[in-house]
Image (tube, rainbow, N blue to C red; front, top):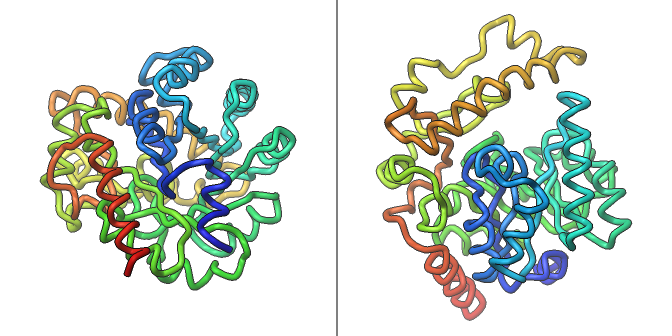
Length: 328
């Protein structure tokens, strides 16, 4: 399995994904990454509820900023009938408007795969270990986003090296996600054998991302040791900057919540409860900065982020790094 298959799936110049981020995936950021040679992924809840775009017109606006490929994130968690109906509607509109690359997460991607494959598109799925990778492959996905223990958002438990060793015989493109912000980071995982990379935190600290300046400044100032995992945002471990607000909130779910999160019948409702509470907090913190509680998602890729730069500058560094890797 070669890098070119991933590039064929994305129809891009560079094997770089701007990961879907709530609340930071504003249309201008998504478009800028695609325009610079990678692929920006639209996070629908961010587009609609944070950036106040009706979904169809939001996609049309992004297409007005770039004609290059963009993708869409579908979280397939069965939290409610209304949520799934909304996601199905978003998927149908995206396919109608020509989007052909999708990233699924937190649930069974089967229904997404069926619709996307029927339209000639491709689906990659977020996984943290081989168990979930095999389930995703059983449901027809075309590639795997390997979320490691350095990721922002929903982090895994294994290193990039360990995940690749566990998954490299599966016969589909593997994409490294977590702890990546520099050309050196990209070259490291590509030399291991990954076909591409997914970056999130690095793209928050860009001029095209409209997250609050306080959020970007916190990323620049943070060290790896400042990144903590909390269960209190979605019920599963999420990487955040360990601010005073996070310290007061705590990192662990209480015993009752832990029981409900493990229960086969109640876990979806418990995750919905956590998510409903946290989406508003994350949105407010991203847009209001220190004027609100500082709940800021970020991964250990903060180690290589020293300033706010343009998306084009980030992508040029990665492009140069890939060129040097090929020549070495």
